[in-house]
Image 1 (cartoon, helix red, strand yellow):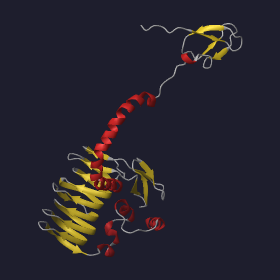
Image 2 (cartoon, rainbow, N blue to C red; image 1 turned 90 degrees about the vertical axis):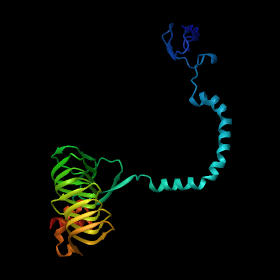
Image 3 (cartoon, rainbow, N blue to C red; image 1 turned 120 degrees about the vertical axis):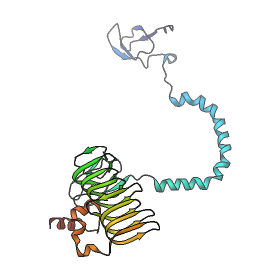
Image 4 (cartoon, one colour; image 1 turned 120 degrees about the horizontal axis):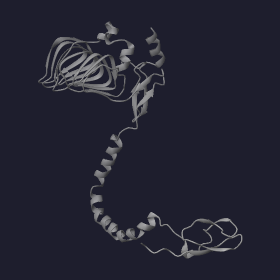
Length: 307
């Protein structure tokens, strides 16, 4: 055991009585008069306990490493001067493509677009005060549940979602689904089989591994086909079939592009089909869930919804 430190004599500031106290004591009571007093000012200077800060502790090490750091900077200076343009380009690239602090969210009730923090889990529409969830949903087995979120909906290979109306921000369909799926962003379809659901999305990608038959109409703004699909499609923008893509069924689109190696076997109608039948793309509330066909004011949207 280490040897004990000897006690030091201290005196009471009231009665001047002297007594011995162990080193490190902050305050004590006088054994003569019972007065309580602090010992910070009464300890001798040699007996004061001083706690060194981290900077003071690391000062000797920093002094030893200072020559090495100067030598390292001197050796790296030619390299820094040589690759300075690339470093500036990398810094500019990071500033341009860094993750945004805010992300746009569209209300599925009135279609109002507003921004929320990137890591938010839920929000409320400032226009109609509707609650909007932002969490992601993963379906790995056969379930029946309500899905109303602006997060990502992922249906695995053996998953099956049975719901009357499903609202999501992005979708990745690798299994089965029933009902209506409205996606505000991009929908990826990679399943092989039959989809007993109606799909409404801003963008749809039919992946290479897909060989799907969609029983109900697909309403979309832009669509890209890389796999095989059989469906009735209403495309409000551009429909493109890439190499080895195959589309069969009925197509209504404003414009269509078929790349070399792509195959289209369908009844084709080119033009503004929504002018003849405005309800062919669904009600205004349904379109607010998956696409903004026209930028109208919130007051006009509320009026149309009431009509």
